[in-house]
Image 1 (cartoon, rainbow, N blue to C red):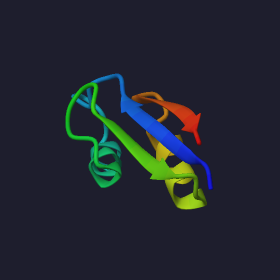
Image 2: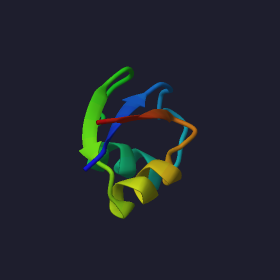
Image 3: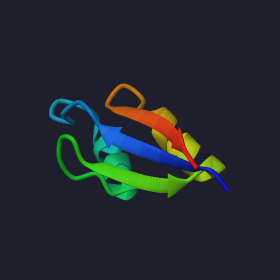
Image 4: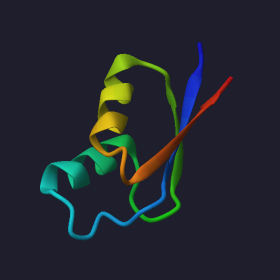
Length: 60
């Protein structure tokens, strides 16, 4: 199964509370944090919510 490498590239300061909660749920706590998650619809939806704050790469 493929994986997603999610990197927080922008600060969450000034963003909505649900965006902050979504970043925390993904495991991103501060700028330039990187997490690797399975490529599942749940994570795709979370990334879509905060797409302006993160970058995503597909890794095998």
